[in-house]
Image (tube, rainbow over all chains, first blue to last red; front, side):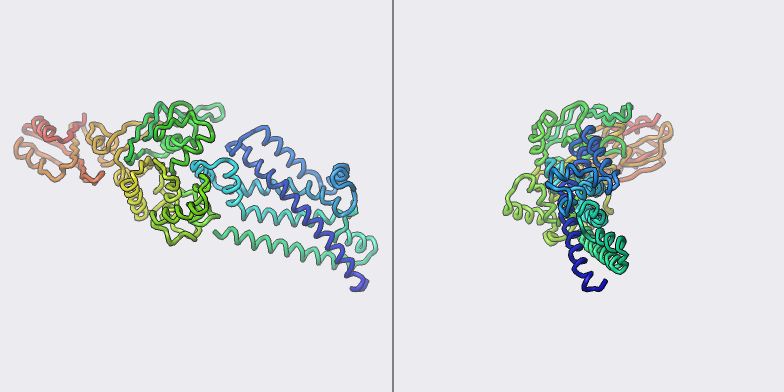
Length: 218
Length: 320
């Protein structure tokens, strides 16, 4: 394959990967962040301790994390149809991607929030701050460096998950590598695709590290 | 100003009961600095945290500035806490906010507007001597500066009382003195009532008007400092002046406010006794000098000599 032949294929696949990752990252944060906060505040000694709720949430997160992504993607097809209206295509892939990454991100959020000292939370309570104020103005801002680090890891995982989206017609770089590189023996394209993926992951990780470090400086 | 009565706190730990407070009564008067002295594990930290209900007492009542706290609902308790300042051993500042942002936090909680927050923050930082550090982050400050931020933050709501949880224990001696001096001047100038807990005698000695000595979840003795030291068998005096255990017949003499009178030589002259000095010290406590002397008296009119010393207004304790 010549460069002229590969170039449009690569651009299209990169665009699809970007679309899947951006949308699923958005929804992962939307669901995973509150879930992670809920895991921390409902725990023993938390702001809103509730053992039953904490157990249920913990179980949901563990189930989400124990399913291999490729199985999850097939298993949630009915749900995907319900939400997106179709079960194939780039947008259809966003549903399983979010379901796969949100529990993972929730655990990372939990870890980051636990790093905030008990002292700091109690000081806020002693000043008369309510629970929502403490979550919004103490826990989340104090944990922001850890949250950004967790988000970076999650985005990298999403890029890797999205490579499997070809199975349900999601397209993307992983799909390109399998269809051309593996099934049509286009080794050059395979190698180029892998290089593009490595570069994207490097960029994401470096950006995440830089932001996290800047936030942690204080 | 602070009234605590019948306070008990029992923790349950895997079926076992741990008594942190075994029935404590405490009364802190308006405008005084009250110190609770005790080793770690004595229950003083639990006691302090019961005063703003960070810990719910198992039994007993807590009232601050005339308001009974244990019966308040959640919203009312939050409002009451806005009028009770607290400072912490490890400062507990928000590392993601600047100094000004930290001081503004309680004002945000109280719902103060932007302009009022800016005005108060400037005032408070001026008060603690950190006006030039408004834009710095806690990570860029020294321990003493962090505690000054903590104090400014605690004063934001114009509190009637300030609770201090080992506020100087993480600081070096010089910085400790400057923080204690700041607390003393806030107490004098703003009429701020301060309840502090500490395991350090020099904090009590330096700034407290009254003190309670705690041990095993109970208050062993409490009262004005001078009054406590002059009381026979005083724990405070024993801890303030560490002397070796007395042998039978040894006499401990405590002077309060008259350390410069030549009583020992008078006794020797008048009663023909031999005095050997076994130990002693002089301390500056709450602005007055207090001394304690361990002596052994022999010969002559020993009993009359001891009687004379007691008559002179000294506390004379004879070991048996």
